Amino acid sequence: MKQERGNWGSNLGFLLAAVGSAVGLGNVWGFPYKMGKSGGFTFLVIYLVLAVFVGFIIMMGELSMGRKTGKGTVGAYHALSKKFRWVGWLAVFSPFVIMSFYTVLGAYCMEYLTLNLGDLAFSGAEVMTGADLFGSMLTNPFGAWIFTVLFILICFFINRNGVSGGIEKFNKIGMPALFVMLVIIIIRSLTLPGAEEGLKFMFKPGYAVSAGFIDEKPGFLTVLATAGGQMFFSLSLAMGAMITYGSYVSKKENLVTNAGIIVIADTLIAILAGLAVIPAAVATYGPSAALSGPKLLFITLQDVFAAMGKIGPLFGVIFYLLVLIAAISSAISLIEVITTYFMDRAEVKGKQGNRSHIVLGVCLAILVEASIVALDGLGANGLWVPLQNQFGIIGEINDCWLDFMDFLSEGLAMPLGALLMSIMVGWEIKPKTLLDELHIGSNARIDTFFSICMKVIVPIGMALILLGQIDGFLHLGIF
Ligand code: PHE
Image 1 (cartoon, rainbow, N blue to C red):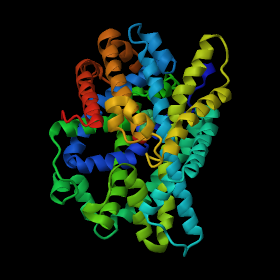
Image 2 (image 1 turned 90 degrees about the horizontal axis):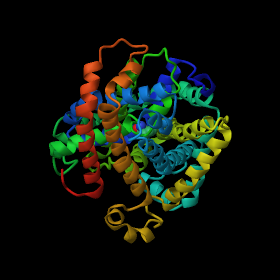
Image 3 (image 1 turned 60 degrees about the vertical axis):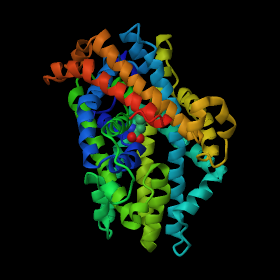
Image 4 (image 1 turned 180 degrees about the vertical axis):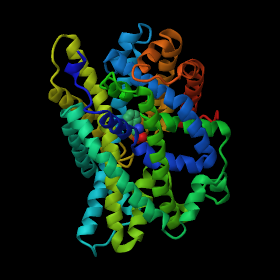
């Protein structure tokens, strides 16, 4: 049965695809900014501890769930547990919701890439400031929508060609290219005068407060919740992505080592992305630089490139291409979660699913929700306003469709999914069920570590992270 579903062409191909899923927008703007704001080095240490005791464990758990059952998310939960079978649905719902805005952010990168390419081709043209550009982009909903369609179209062509023929192929070229481009940007960023300020912002404890970047030092629990939330989003956990990718891994591969490599590579690239982005922004703007969310990528950095003079657009092209590749390689993993669900469903009914038709249907459904987010333009075009009053507190705290979709997925469904998964594995089906699978191809002595983490540390950690996310999104001020 496994053979009919197809497998990765090689273990390296699988690894690059999994790292591609993990390395995304979260690494490029979430990690560096949160690290600086939440205590620099302290944040990094907490992040690393969480990555080992929570991230690595869930990563092994998800990969082995996929390979053991040979099924995508819904099928895997169905096969493993009666009580928790519905959790599989949660992990199809989240990727679908995330795609509503991930595609739009990807589209913005494409738009910036095109603009910088234009500047490069017609040097001498006046380079617009980041704020002007961003403003005019948001209030031109049709342009954003066209790029959203293009972004989804690219993903469609990749996913349509299958796991090894599409996803693996894209990542085999995309990931090394991304790495090279990242190194180029890091060299440029670190050689700008004043770059040390940025390094201090990232790595020196308390520096962000003393140098006036932020007003208040966050409490320990806030840092814990921020690092945790960032960690599982960045590692693509609780979204069915690793279950789905794991279901295509051959039985002879070592899942323990693979999980370790994915966690290390993702963390490393997040730190490298920080070195590429923060020193450049801080060197150009100092404490007044906008370092959070979409502003960092689309206003601050565009200004950094504009300030470089004639050569600026070249770095702009390299940078936005790099971010675009990162966004595509993550987006295709989310599309694959939903696609695999439908492929598996056809197989259960004894039919052979038509991948092209399924991917087309999935992409069209994503286009519908993404259109709302794209046309809303981060709230600039007011599409969220009519609904605001009807959602009570949720309506009050979310300013736009993107915020709302992010809250639903990253704020609620993802941490809840990971929490339930660890309870299921730790207490219902028992860690041994997955350890048996992990020991195929690996004789690492992880049994006690895996069991204790899965039973106790991950549930506590995920419960805290869930609370932290709700607290952060709803501004409740618990932490
Ligand atoms: N890990 C991706 C990022 O860092 C986002 C993502 C989450 C992708 C979940 C797939 C699944 O941006």
